[in-house]
Length: 242
Ligand SMILES: O=C1C[C@@](O)(C(=O)O)C[C@@H](O)[C@@H]1O
Image (tube, rainbow, N blue to C red; front, side, top):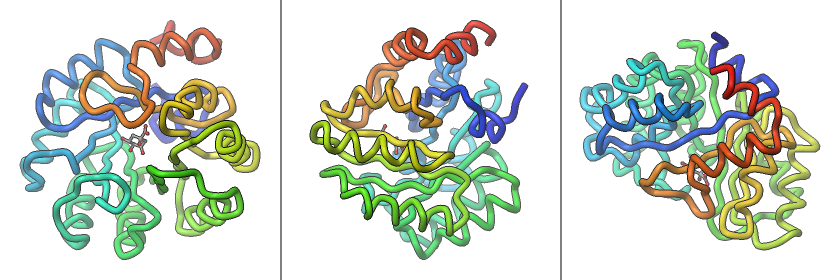
């Protein structure tokens, strides 16, 4: 079985679902049974962010054999992390050996080098991310963001911005034409098609929802699987083989 690092570097897009800690055991079992490729553990959604409690909520996903991505999203980028950055770095360090990859915002400049160093030490790939829940910045600004994330040591760069129409979708698609190792998402109703179409252009991960708290424009997991299977023979074959 390929490692998550190998799958992220491959040609077949992965379908992720985000989970909190409401019912980790049930979520992990459901995700495994449904064939979720990647469980994004939204630790900023957890009721307790004590490392021991977080590790207890991570464990069922590991036990189910699901690839895991730890995200502790800052409030500045739409998340709910209640603490300071020093505590966030400590939590990343505690969790890293127990997950397969991490996601950290480029804007979390104070902890970015520490998270990347800890991920390197644990040999885990790092997604360096950028979110804009209001708009899609112009292409030169987004290119500068991608370049900065790559310079910081990103294995993958994730750009997720609110898309208002064709112009924004073209800007976002342009990033996939220009760079490899990208995750690109157009959020919102007008971006929803990007969640199926951008993986066809090489975006490595698409995020979907099983109940819970869907991000703007996110499609249900079952719809994402159905549409991606229809348009990506490689994805359909990977599901058939799983
Ligand atoms: O950054 C992303 C993408 C996302 O915001 C989305 O729009 O699908 C959902 C988040 O959970 C994830 O961390």
